[in-house]
Image (cartoon, rainbow over all chains, first blue to last red; front, side, top):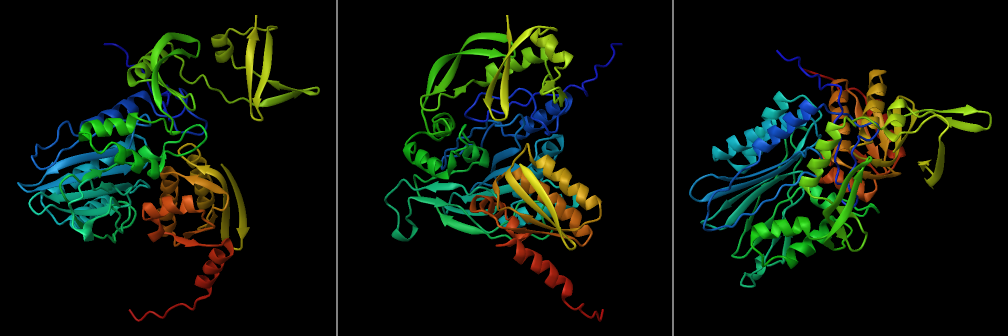
Length: 367
Length: 123
């Protein structure tokens, strides 16, 4: 029998394609670390929950795209056929990004789906889910949720919004009664996220839909992503983009929304980048470069390759916190052996120190 | 993110400077927990110098709120800049927490609640 490998002590890198800069491979100070096994389990739970297909309908066209902006996202969505007439759309976001968050998300989505399938009143769906969660989950986690139920016969959409980013409804037809006409409507409603309070106060709203209407449900990851200057992609840009892309099929539209702009508002162009990570040369790789802020974006395949290589070379946890000591008038920085071994720095070597900012400097080994 | 803590009678005031995001919220969480564990249950959080809060930050306050409710404690917020208020309001957290325009007002609210005569119970 093979001995079990203890994965508990290995810290998983956190890939944060914080749109605007490549990604960070090592955890930031103060951030809780996950073990590999926990992460893989959490990812598996999430992957199994997201829908593999949507109900076939001649009345509506559905497109969906999910891309984790963190290593594990807490977002979930689904489209559920209730009966011959009604179709439900669910989207939500669970706070936190641990195994606990993944389990909380599983409980949340499962309960919502059960109550939706039971054809309960839309307010009851949320209220009952919240009640069950509140009894079951004694944690600080919460989930924002939007549910819309579309009656394909009366073309009416009923919805509740439990603290989620309001979906956008874009009207494309001009053949609409004046009272219902507004080019862009945000589906807001009074509500609060799930698992915050025992008795929720919610509002159900109804809206008439017309041929050509486009409904965009999204999570905050889409608009909160910032570029290097901390500028958000924002609601306004999203509204502009959806208007621009309105004539495309829904699936293509979702892909374009996610891929079209850099988060600084610039345009991404396909190019080749030299990928070099912690001394590992991955060579010239296909990437997308922003024409405005020059941020480089790598695709998921490349990220996976880097991750595998970094795992293989046991480079986890190279980031170290050290204390500055004193010797005479100079401050002394001790280099931990893991770093000197990796960087090949030896006693009496010459280093060049270059300040990058008030809080950052670069150390380079001079041959 | 930087946290300045001060005492105003029974109430602990936390002034948070910078961003409360996934990375910094753990520091805030441990700070709050250590104060709660030391037996303090009344807080005013002054957001005047906070420029961003993510859902991780909301989670910290929700956790503290649940913990404090068990101990008859409370968190009140003050001086919220619009972007921070927007995040709180979107998730509906303005329905759980009291949000005051100034720290003084939040502290006074604590004092008023305390000085209110106890209601007679006929149960």
